[in-house]
Amino acid sequence: MNKTIVLLVSDPVIRRVICKALEREGYCVLEAGDIGKAVERIKECMPDLLMVRHYTETMSGHEAAKYLRSMCPGVPVLIVGGILDDDELTNREFLQRFEVFPKPFKGVLSVAVRKSETGALRQPIVPVADGLIS
Image (tube, rainbow, N blue to C red; front, side, top):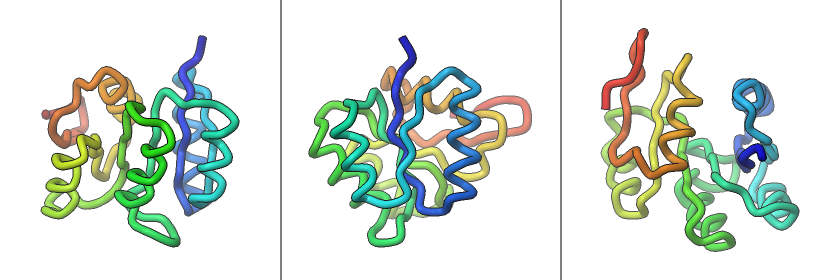
């Protein structure tokens, strides 16, 4: 059975690119462009992973992730995007036990998804041309 990801990304182009990349890896992706749609998606199907961009149109990605996780406690959260040296993002990840995957993430997004599902990410990972540095 395919694992299900609720993907909350406001920008439709970025959302579509991430969605297609994850679908190619065999994931079932339920797309949402705003928090209301993400809530609907969670009500449709309990996800295996919540993936949220670091900001949405109405609130920070961190706040959106906290709200969505309250609807499905225990589901891993992966916040994508952001700037690697953003201290606030790093500290919030640690406090809430959210996984953070900063830009750029060309070629390694599916690795971050798999690691976040198992809890293997305990610190932000740095994408490099030929792999990951943790």
